[in-house]
Amino acid sequence: MRSHHTIRIGIAVATGALAAGCGASSSAGPAASAAPSQAASAASTAPSSPESGPATSGASARPSSPSAGTSGPAALPTLTRPVKPPKNPTDTVPNTGWVLGVVTRGGSGPCYGFTADNGTQFALHSTDGITLTTGGRVKVKLTTTMLKIYCGPGQLMAMTAAEPIG
Image (cartoon, rainbow, N blue to C red; front, side):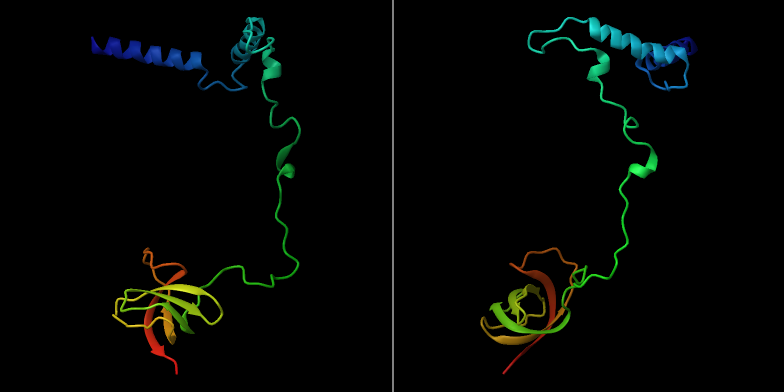
């Protein structure tokens, strides 16, 4: 009994797939090409509603095929090789190592504010308990950090050491 139901369900699924057009291609023969033309003729004979305006034929409502105006890969944009190297660096590598500047947010941590002498703002993080005084000039050793925390405005870096200047 179960095998009869399984076969009937399989036939129903296959019939539904064929009716929906699944698996149809341009090389499927005349049966596949007849269905779109019948749909187009049905759309052109359907009455139009007052809101949508006059009836349009199915052919004019369809977008043009992508191969109508261009052919092949020649129409794709291509990248050109630069004539000479760029003047400025194209990747931004953060300053690491010893940097001089002024403490803008001090305390005993773990977050500090720091402005380097070149004007770059840093949000520093350190769990070493280093105490920095706001407004003091210091030399700090910076490294990149993988932490995703907010220590204030500026580029997040890890501070591994700090020495007062002067």
